[in-house]
Length: 446
Image 1: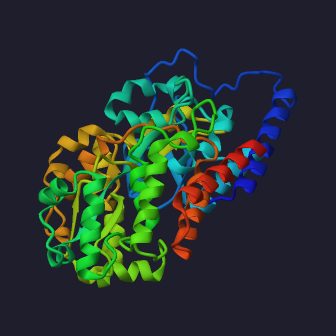
Image 2: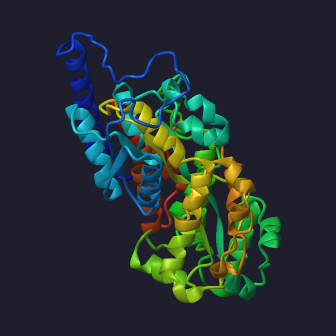
Image 3: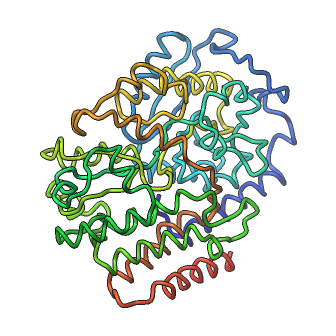
């Protein structure tokens, strides 16, 4: 998800140039491709090749999923459909897709796209099938409203992809450290005591005073947690930069800065060996993160099973992560490809993905299925952690990210917080103003 602003815009401008040249000339003379969907938007989609010949769909994906197994299951039920899967590391995967779209050749029939990368492809709308033309309206009600809306264009007339998993955020905490500091340890009691960010800050101060340890692992995750609870971030759909006037963003930054200066936020870097070891060693008490963080904590702190729990964050929730299934225009069998992705992300299959790989479902029907309602996690003291993330998922607000979202979040604010870590006597208000100016200047140069 981390890409330099300059590189992004050079690629973006190149992409626009390719599209402009394609619109001005080239073969076809406006001839409609026979494989393009009818503008009627009929929802009756064939799941087999009309002529009965074998159809091969290419499917690019990334990450740890059960999509290979599900593809084989689909093939068994559709003998004349073959699905060729290619799995690549996320960064390379999204670069490869971007480059293929820029070149006008080499894109797959189906592309999995991370929510953090959708903004890269919005200028390329004409290189994707509009899933509303393929019948997506028929299944829209099955998914969380905010998850669905992120995949639409600004006026809601075009749908880039169908929803897969999500990353609703909650509070992971160490029971043993909470107990040591005299804090409640039951998830419901913790949520009740820390129901506001002011109460959270006070508990953090008390914890650090009693234990000598940071309450929160690192500043970025605290910033993210508060930032993502708002209904706006850095940009309006019009492209207007609103970061400087967004009080939720400023509150997030200043709270993280306060934690740094008062010592209840740790100084480790995310994904660092020190961060990983701290989860196992009890170097901090709280990690504010998404549903998929549960798997990460387990992997880094295998000997701390039973010491961790999950509860609601103060004042709401946000989302970090999740993907969409998109259909590049190069695909010659969009109706069949749509039938497959509609089946792949159906409630029944999202439950399978949750059970096998922990992919948290965006299909709301899953929340009433026995395999979800009866879920428990022995690592987290046999807690039904799925219920916590389900509550969080239903609190998330839909936001518009904007083209500079990645650089604003992963470069500018991060640099600002790290400056305060390096020099704790800096004025946080001034650093925040510098962050806003940095992003504003970048916007102005584009």
